[in-house]
Length: 294
Image 1: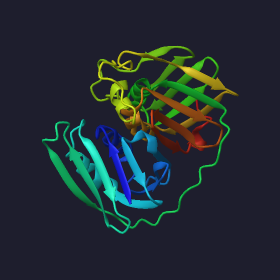
Image 2 (image 1 turned 180 degrees about the horizontal axis):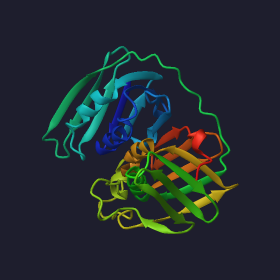
Image 3 (image 1 turned 90 degrees about the horizontal axis):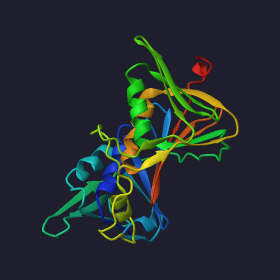
């Protein structure tokens, strides 16, 4: 038996938004520690990995490990019926062929119930090896989203170069070339005032995805906060990646004010959006043939 309660449905909605353009269907692996998902995109270029830890739910119970096969688009359609502040309850009996979802308004005057049909998905669980990365950079998730979006208007690939001075994103295309550099220690706002497309979870919303609630008087420290660029460097790294995949990854920006990029020569880029009780991670293979291009 699986029973899970999330105090705000917006958390699961945003997790689904983060992977829906990359993953068609996937197994949600549930055990006493929480819920995990791991799936490749159809081109087998990018791997998405999601974790929601058990202590991040208002209530959580999983009697035995189980895999729940779900069509991501179908679950996303169901979640559209929930208001962001609705309480979300999920339940699956051991032998059931559907996932029971209940959305309840905060005043309990609106209740929606859905039974989502499940799938039998035969996929091999990919082991992700521990990797010693040459460079790790942490920056504002909204700044990262803006850079990827802007560079996608110029070229199809983005070269990411990390040195002790900073991180540079560059691209070349038919209309010209572009380069954006963030210096070590520089800061960017966690919320972009002129960007309506990216709306990160503020601290109050994120904290509600926790057993221990914050009081309503606690303000959002994310709004207007500055996220400094932090670089940990063993050696300088420069790798090239598909900009469209990077743009897709930035759809996880609403979950976290910061994103961390992990890079090493000839290994997949790790893009991590960590929030209080879980994370969304993406692994993207570099374009090796282009890594030496300027």
